[in-house]
Image (cartoon, rainbow, N blue to C red):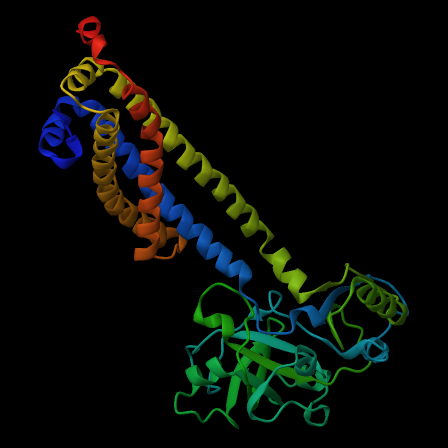
Length: 412
């Protein structure tokens, strides 16, 4: 007589309650591993997507350097001379003073001077002439900023918002402020450099670009305004747009040239926006690597735990296996029996793990803005756990399948 236990699950299901402690431990281990796996993978995936998300600008063609004034230094040089010298370099297409993505700050914005509550808090790009050209913004409506329309910086700041600055806004901000599509020519009210009130007239709308990568709608909402800078000695970010991707040697020339024309300033090492983005996310990249290591430990410990429990459980049933072998069960029958048994237990654990995963995800989402779990992630995680469980149970199942019927008397 040949016994094929996989074809009839009744005896198998009836036998599980007799081994309740081991079965419950295996189910619990599978469910916990499933919950951890799903949510850690969700966090890693979200972090990886953020790291790979570009700003939409020509990141490798725009270099920046932080120019810091030395207190008490004479003959410090002026921003006008510094920009002229930078533009004279053969590999430079444009240069400007002002913020860049990952270095711009936000400010409240209103559509009327007497409005109390702001409509949004976009990123403010306020800098020298040529800032929009250096960033190479793409106009979609209206006109670009030109040097002829810019007021002097000292006049603009001293006016306390009376002088209107021409400005560009991103398409997403235009749609938010003016859903009817009539943003051009409108006045908006905000502040620059933290405390200076500014009245801006929208002369153009540019394609969206990212000032930060937080997955919020505000990432692509920005205002770009320029003023005429001449003989001011101002520290801050200086930008250079290369005619081609900027090389390290060119960035070194950038810093040297700026130092020669602004000797009262010291410069931090220049870097491209691409490098700035990688530096900005360096901490998040490190956390992702740590989570990957944790994930490896979780999957490995799950496999080892299941292997240990299954090995102990299976070897404890040698008499039963010997009897079945004596009744005609083949080695394949014995192996398939224990593999099927393990599969049923792991599937129960997976079902419990799905519920646990979703509950844990909701808690994490409430406190840490973790993305919700998708069906594909749950299915993939379930497959990984089931595969790990089956792999861990295979060796004990194969080992006991070699028990000979002659061992019945010795084992009983």
